[in-house]
Length: 276
Ligand code: GLU
Ligand code: ZN
Image 1: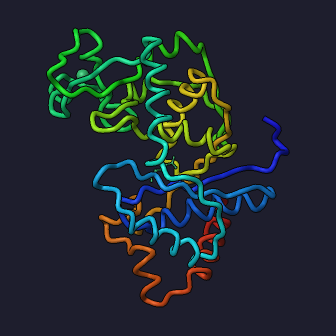
Image 2: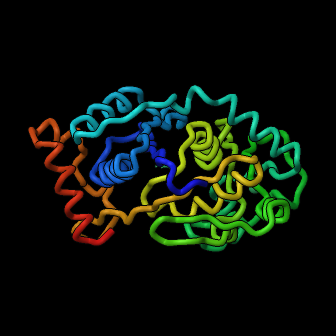
């Protein structure tokens, strides 16, 4: 990629809960990197979580971002792109890179799954048995086959530097959910390519996922962006900020009359002090 080309960044929230300060930071970092490079900042609503996706939250997100003083271009929401996910999954399936998995969560736990980078690594139970057509199936990426097909790969993180693709920490991830034509991994990889995103900006909690996404880009012949995983904001207890731990939603702060631009400015200064 031409490093001097103006970056295209994005903020890609899922409308299944209110935005909190951690989301504000992701949006501000993505926005500011685009502005600093004379590029574009996109908003993409990742609304394929079935009944958990609530359209009124997407509307709230736009109000939140404007309150923070950000400007963006909105690209089509994920729910409008299901056919592209299905087509990509079909091509991977036809190449023998996916296998159906009928396991439930408790079956995976009972099968002696080892801990990985994000919870348990799927032990490959269904890879070695004939599919049971009477049970709903998810489709998993066969990481060993994927690696054999792509060979060794690297990806670039703006803060962490060059990374060797390593699929062992996540194992054979789900690419097609039981209830949906995609999983987060497949949808986000296809969408970032379709939207022309050249700098994928998000919190460091999604760092591990980029190994999978880089592999999918190679398998599907997609352009390869760079990544910028920013450090997470931590609460006073050192825990990741999240709604469930009582971090107030941006919408609540807005309703209470707080100045969003001032908040964004304070967050920028705090990041500078932390040296990130
Ligand atoms: N939609 C994902 C989330 O809200 C983020 C996707 C991404 O930035 O890659 O957690
Ligand atoms: Zn299985």
